[in-house]
Length: 358
Image (cartoon, rainbow, N blue to C red):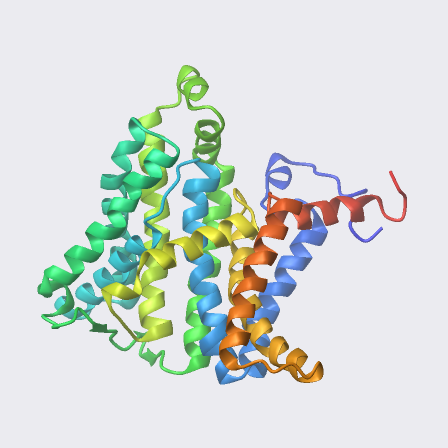
């Protein structure tokens, strides 16, 4: 009753091919953006803005980049954190060495640097696939961190490789408060998410999905595998590079090579697995699950232990949190392997016929 498209007739090709063809979807997206831009900056505390909302948006963008590569193009990668590091250090050096460089241009050029490295490490995808490709991209994780550690010029000759992000200024306005940083990150992530949504609906996205489903058949029908795969690595690495720049400039403020470890790559991989592989929305849902569930468990477990009069120490609560977190991930993947995005899709299908059973 609430989610039916009956009566919503399309009278042109443009209307039928728009991003959100159903009116309810357009209203929902506009409402979410209105709340994100107009409500949350004024009601959220400084802790929520700096420790929850900003990292949620940054990791959502990184997960979106990985989802374009793995979910849509079918190419496994374990070097996401390395491409984020390239974007962060690239933006830092462009700001440092080119006077008057706009901050958005530095972020874009950092993403371009990550895209070039992603193309270089994506070359093995022309010959290998699956877990063998994942191991090949894993080499990027160790190689990039080794370069950032050994070549002091990249960190402005810092002894430990630590860089401190410069101040962000746009149109004469300093982005130096939690609200401004949140709005800046939200604007960048929203724009890039809309671009990704359009990209996967274009001929490029359809070519990626054809290669993902069966690359031999895609080549038979005329899809150039080399160009399509390398383009997927380039676009994915660009998104991860921009996410790394936002991670350094708007979240942490200062980063080091060890901060972009293999553990971070696995966390982003878990985000798209839980959220939904091959789904733009799944990238955001997976990031929310990975970031918010530990915070919820941190708050709930001590209260439950106190209520049940259990002699739990802080270390015990931390261990139980890891056990519950891992158990929920396994349970969720067994019950719905296609992720949270699939659950949302099923919910919409049920709403289309509600209150009728069929």
